[in-house]
Length: 203
Image 1 (cartoon, rainbow, N blue to C red):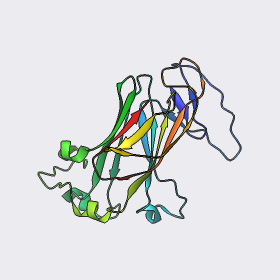
Image 2 (cartoon, one colour; image 1 turned 180 degrees about the vertical axis):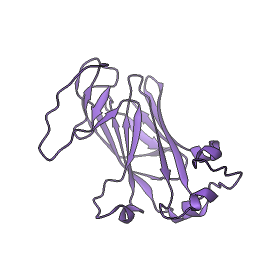
Image 3 (cartoon, rainbow, N blue to C red; image 1 turned 60 degrees about the vertical axis):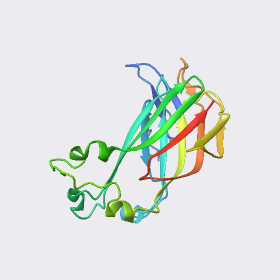
């Protein structure tokens, strides 16, 4: 299944050809179900100006209610990443029970330090509180968008703290037809991009 990035329409089926209407100034973009995509959505004149901008996590649920994605960041200018100065996160969403979806952020570099930098063995150089992490201390997740949710949650919380959210009704991840998917938008979950955290969606 694939979700339209701009309007959250869902298209199901394998090997099927679809036609999508697009404006002259728009290129259709799709997110595969089961993916979590990290974006910075504030318009800037150049990418260096986005360095401290917050992130949006777009969670596209697959037919089982799960999704996964990664985010890698370094300073983009020096070779300090070869000394362990970087952020490498894993985001996972999983339907734990019929009425609960859990989204987690974990330090992937701590699990796989010698896979973080291509061709470079870090040999203990990576530290979870490295200098680059300190430089990014103010960078947060400003929004989480979950597509493929078939009903409004009763609550959304992060590490036990309730969060404000909006829900647009639509098709769920397990439905069989194409059309507008259900969309949950969580604004300012108050989590940092480099931290471990757990966000719980109770249905």
